[in-house]
Length: 180
Image 1 (cartoon, helix red, strand yellow):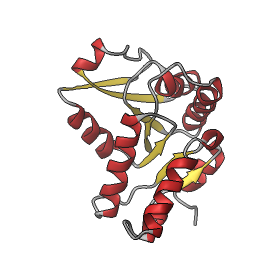
Image 2 (cartoon, rainbow, N blue to C red):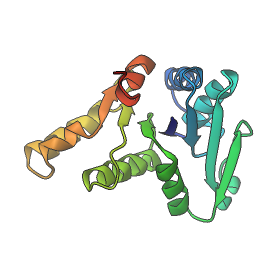
Image 3 (cartoon, helix red, strand yellow):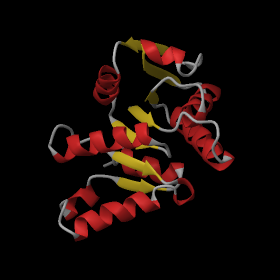
Image 4 (cartoon, one colour):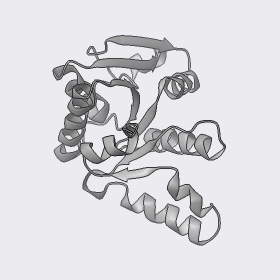
C-alpha cells in the first residue's frame, strides 16, 4: 500500500511530535507499506523518512524544483520525483496514494488535508484519510469543523470521511483493508 503522509517541515517544534512521527514511519515500513511524501528532510517529513529508512522502507519523495532553495531535500528517498509546481506535486501525491495520513503541521499541511477531504466529499476518491492526533494537536481544528457542522455550513457526514487516530496501531486499523 502507498501511504501519502503530510506534515510539518519545521524542526522548531516539540520533540514529542518528531518522535511520534518517526515511530509512525518505522511502523509503516515494518508493515511493508511505501511512504509518499513531500521529500523534506526537516520537521515531521524528515522524521517520517528517518523512521522509514531505519526500518528498511521504500520512500517516494515528490518535490518541485524550487523547493530545493527553500528547504533541504531528504537524501533518504528511494525514489525522488521532481515537479515544476506545487499543484503538480500535490496531484502526484494524491494519485499515488492508497491512503492519507496527516500529521501535525502548518498551513501547507492544512491545505493538503482540506484538498483531499474536499476531493473525497466530491466523490473524486474514496481513500482513507487519517488525522494523526499526537498530543491533541488537531483538537482545535476538529472543534472548528464541529462548529461548521452545527451551523450547517458543512454536512454532518463529513465527520465520516476521515478518522482521528492517536497511535500507529489505530492508524493501521483505519487504513488497512479488513481481513475477511
